Image 1: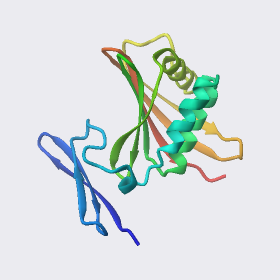
Image 2: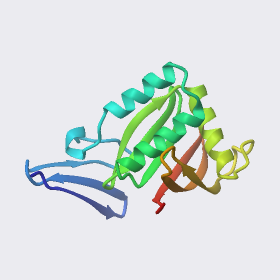
Image 3: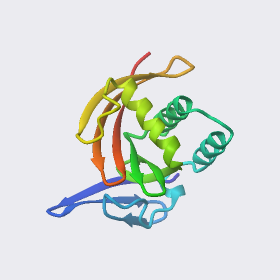
Image 4: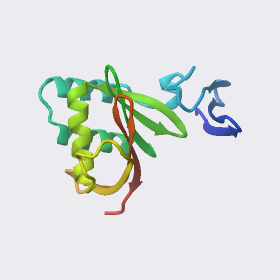
Length: 173
């Protein structure tokens, strides 16, 4: 079988995630702010089909509530520890942290992504009108099959809006 090890070497100027595939003898190294530098999605074990299916569902009229729920439970099913929403000029980029490596998962249209962020903030008991100061909140996301995921949410203002960080904590039924 294929062995996979994730390491993070932290120095005075930040960290560098390292993904090592022992079976193939490959390593991917990059700065924490960059996404999947030199990493093969197959090496990381993240299925790209889920992001494609979500993009199609959004185009077909999926609402922000369902999209957020899908994103949270996709991340949970992939054993991701964090989910990030980063506002950029071209849309809201959604990243996953899986095995210590930050990877872009999907890019949401700007208006739709902002509605998703507002839904998350409202669900977490945060003030949705406040975008100029950092905030924290918590939320238990309930899935259709009775699965629950505890979320710790932090927001921070940025040049293009606000970014959210969601820490996923598995909850026993």
